[in-house]
Amino acid sequence: MEVKAVARYVRISPQKVRLMADVIKGKPVEKALATIKFMPQKAAGIVEKVLRSAVANADQVPDLDIDNLIVGNLIVEGGPMFKRFRARARGRGTRILKRTSHIKVILIEAQS
Image (cartoon, rainbow, N blue to C red; front, side, top):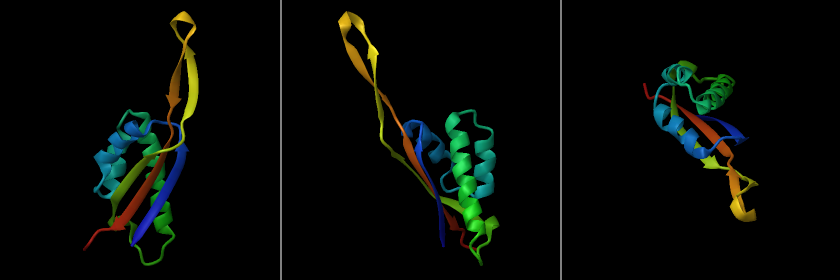
């Protein structure tokens, strides 16, 4: 059985979140939360919040042991970008892209 949680339009670059995703993918939920807790990156706190939401969603499903869950997949996709301009030399302007992310956490039951 799969349980998921989604955070959309998070104001952080997908590249930075994918570093966190690769670290906890495939780990048991308790170990993944313990790993994220001690990471100093901003993305760690965001991923932790989505992971806890997925665990809370799993708690609502009957006949599902939340102690037996693993992080099946953690998908990070790019969302819409805020486009800004910065003044540069000789009266020009360059584009700045402020990126957003969509984060999806999928938890699955470990085979016993």
